[in-house]
Length: 93
Image 1: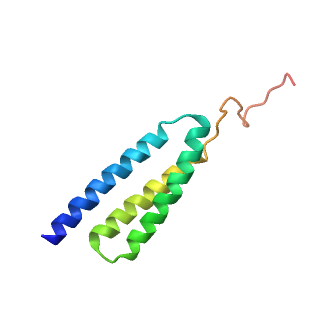
Image 2 (image 1 turned 90 degrees about the horizontal axis):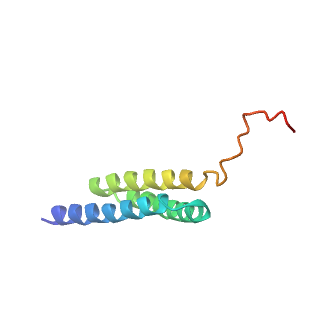
């Protein structure tokens, strides 16, 4: 019974974390960068801490949180102004 309650708790917690992830990714420009970077660091840290606990459900939750955290950090590194392309030559200048 303890294992079942633990899994239900972790599943509901992961759902809440995923909702924070989708909210953070849906923001625009500077708000998106700052929120994605901060939330990505928190998720990665929580994921590593979950990996320390040697229980199957916590390890799976730790992998999911670490992957979401790294993806959030990658979203936070996205360029704000996407009008400038470095691979195209502008001959007018």
